[in-house]
Image (tube, rainbow, N blue to C red; front, side, top):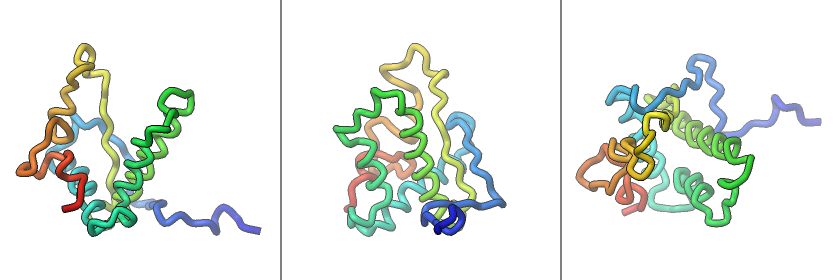
Length: 145
């Protein structure tokens, strides 16, 4: 018989010293925003250009799957929450400065009236991107060079 305590998932990071505390993006310091961005980029770098080893691409591919009709179902929030938890766990598992990482969230209530052009996508994590701006995670950052 296998107990729940004997089954492990390499992406679980049950660190009693650092709880998973999620805060809104607009309240993060520049250092906290950099921790998020550098964590994503480190996951890509650790894949060494091999998509089979790229943990960020593995999660992103599930999210962008054209057959992911989940976005139109009642299970959407649970499914999306699990993907966020997976990504947060993989960044925490990088260790070092990322050990206590907490995934930031987008407080979309601040974007009322800006649905076609949300401010958050113009702040470090979106827009058209710029390969000379390492703070921006964009199409340049997603594809191995």
